[in-house]
Length: 417
Image 1 (tube, rainbow, N blue to C red):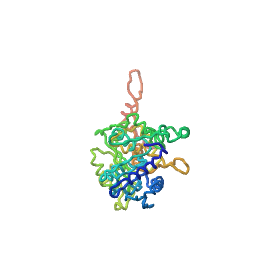
Image 2 (cartoon, rainbow, N blue to C red; image 1 turned 90 degrees about the vertical axis):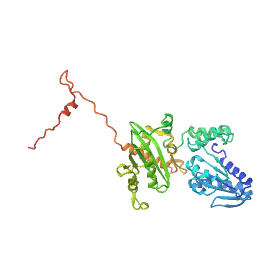
Image 3 (cartoon, rainbow, N blue to C red; image 1 turned 180 degrees about the vertical axis):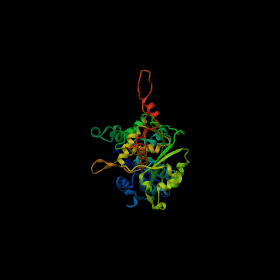
């Protein structure tokens, strides 16, 4: 990991070029992956064409690749369209700002692409909380025989002059400086909706092992994706505690597959909370709504549609609820990271954060959690028992008003005159 403006992208392109030029195998293939394909083009494509020119025999502007004199190919990709990597075998891959990748991309797409050639992978980026990049960093720290870990902090790299560092400290927040220039995973993510609440949950021990208790029913909260992810949270209400015991997400799965996965879990279910658009009819399901499709598997009586409220209203509901939540770290790991990184959209023109959330891999888990918060707010709260009020006639009288009211079983009726 390296601080901002340390030259990660240039170093990546030069490292890939060196490996590709020296490779004497058959059709060497190397990749550079940014969080978005458009980002890969704007950040790395110019460097690649410039530094590859003495070695290059061909390049393709549309497909973002260059061919070298020895038949090696270097191509740029975006993690937002990671399926474009399927079918390729790579001798080496450089992943830039990997903390912004969807966590499943590494295991389901990128790692298998390195298998047949036993290729190498580089994970680079700037810390943004304890996300997937943090896991990789910790793995490398614990296993130096298998991994190489490099950490470049602005305070020790000597890449930026000291007066510039002093200027940065004066002009940005401490959390911003620690994350962007001192490689701190502990600094709060700028623009994160629930950063403070999730940090407090971790600091107070509310993220750990939370077991399923058969004494309580399990309620679920859903975000339903038609073309992308579906997310489901599993919770138990135990007094004032909201125990978040499980999380499930799927991409491209059918309602039947998702329902089967939910029902196969060893839980006794109560209510399944769905977003308001679950009532809409869909042509893809022969005119049946999501509610109608799910009722076949989960039972119509157990389904409830959450009121159609604004996103901001839902975010406030989550903030009000989070201090009561206990998370199972193992089963909810991906969902927890999504809540930590769920953040506002940044407007480059106005240099300010918009009111709307940024749509990325965190959105579905966060949207499902909003359904949970809204359903919790709509749930009837227990009313405390009314205190007994004494109705004293004499010094020895122990009767109460409640006793008197209970004794009046028949109310006197008056006829109309």
